[in-house]
Amino acid sequence: MAVKYFITGISGFVGSELAIALATLGYRVSGVDRAIPDDDTIKDFLSLGIDYTNLDLLERRALAPLLTDIDIVIHAAGVSRVSDARAKPVDCVSSTVLATTNLIELVAAQAESRDTNKPLFIYLSTREVSFYDRLDEVQVNVDHIYAISKRAAEQLILAFSNSFNIPSAICRLSDVYGGKRDHVNKLLPTFVKRAKQNKLVRVFDNETRFHFTHIRDVIDSILEIAEILQKPGNAQKCFEIWSEESYTAEELAALVVSAFKSDSKIDFAVPAVGESAKTIGFSYSEWQFTPRIRLREELCRLSDS
Image (cartoon, rainbow, N blue to C red):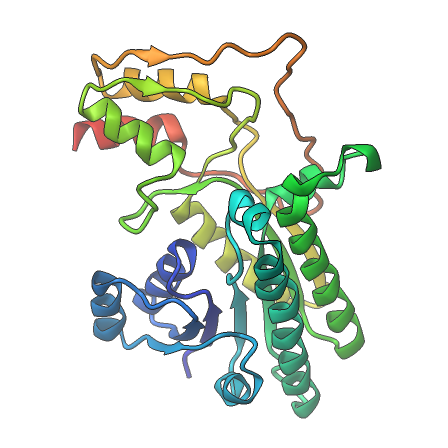
């Protein structure tokens, strides 16, 4: 019998791409989201037999029966942007911390009711947590509400996983791009669109470094991690899914303009005195993410298509 996946946040970019990729591989896929998928995604779901339910994770009574007989839960729901978390902190905590608590508690109930074939739990977190963990207390501010909520969700998953013997994984993602469902207003798609139109490419923030990860690499990594979780001795692990290769916004703009042989001019923001780019240290254990799709090569492919 085919493995049954349950995906939260299934209407979103990563959730929908995951669902479609898994269903295409022959897995049975269902999922929930409080947002309704766009028309193209709904058509893809219908053609592949993906079972979508419009539901908030806080609706416990409706959520519980959907988890029956599920083999692998992929939790991709929650606020997905730093700016949204800062603008609506209560919604961020509710949709990330409270929703995760409700979900993992229901998964724990499923685990307790099964002697074998306990559900696996994979949480799609963020690189922002790895950055947050390296801050001093005096550096923490409201821009870190997003990371704080994700960190709290990770700890709750760890607590329930340890207490109820749930094989689980935390997957920290970074700057995921690619596929037809990528958000058009994100930095990379915006630069690509303007370069293709030979319009001015404007850079506002040149401090942050972006570690772009192609959606196909994310999907392949999650499939590998699901296999790892099923092996003895791999009950709980944290995986960082992003490349060491990184770009500032200026570097990205230059790369995009070059790849598309664009006539676009780049308006560079002038950094304030003393500014330095943020960097993140990497510490992997047995499993190490190795990207198969590099940003430079992908941009060249897109420019030729």
